[in-house]
Length: 255
Ligand code: ADP
Ligand code: MG
Image 1 (cartoon, rainbow, N blue to C red):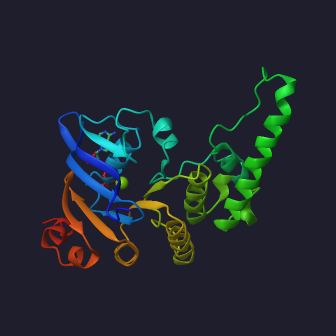
Image 2 (image 1 turned 90 degrees about the horizontal axis):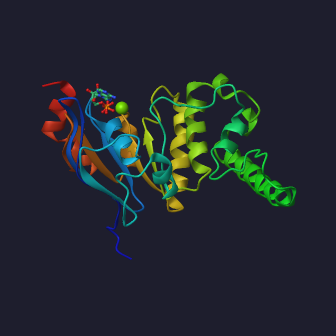
Image 3 (image 1 turned 135 degrees about the horizontal axis):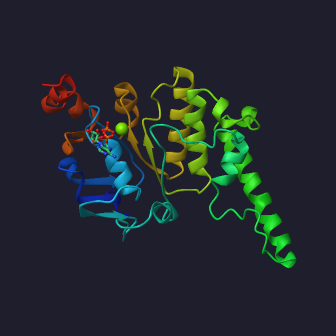
């Protein structure tokens, strides 16, 4: 196998809001099997780039490829269907529903209660629902959320909600996960759990692209670091290089 195979690639992707270019000709490669960190000051365009990749934001120009196929122009559900999942900077659970229900609703093609389903198909649907329920419990155990399975998602702490975001995307067994600031506002204990889970999933072959401000986390756990400021990539390389990169330092200091 080609060790440097790019699972995700953007080619000169731009996104504008009116006259303002939030993402400006960004070409990025995420190596299969890597944990790639995306850093940069607030307003750099990181979340907008995620939205463009995930099909939630139209690109003005450029191409996006995932796993060998063009995904730019696909609706977000279809991007998810290719095996590319993302979490949001602000968690978006169904707040009034239980943690378990949130997971079950995140299963791909979950059957729901469809009035037109003939009685003869009900057995098959019940079997599928049992499968989803089992998978949900597995993932709850993996993400240490089993104890709050029946609590309303809106009642969880900020850190638990971040874990729930990860748990929800795991329901579709994605090839790659994009995490938007997973450790922001999360206490050190839960951050530790989150990192451990990311490392375990990565060891099992899941590729990660992670937006994160916690430099210590990024430097210690990411193979490759990509830095953006003002919609552009200004650095791509290893952690040591990022730490000594003057442009990057200036960007953070607002120089
Ligand atoms: P980051 O995630 O790096 O902090 P964002 O991608 O959220 O940055 O935002 C990049 C820039 O684009 C910011 O100046 C932000 O205000 C602007 N922006 C983001 N989303 C929108 C939007 N929907 N409409 C207008 N401007 C936006
Ligand atoms: Mg952001």
